[in-house]
Image 1 (cartoon, rainbow, N blue to C red):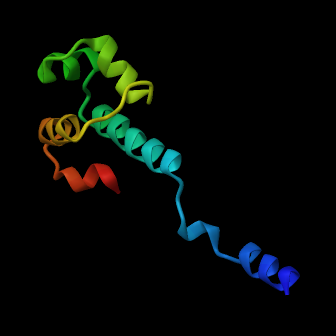
Image 2: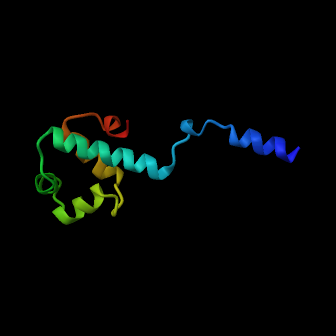
Length: 87
């Protein structure tokens, strides 16, 4: 019976489940993409958001946490709905 349960667990479609780390990477990559699409430097974005360039760089690289407030400001700066950054 235990063997059968293990087989069922191993057959779960793991593609449907995305880890927290992968989700964060996906959002950060989307932010970088939007920044590049708009031709913005990290320094420009940081100045517009009134934060330091080094702080923004750490956010974009995942070393500092991305807050909801910052996500909303980034979306506004990029001229897109916030949910676009979460796709």
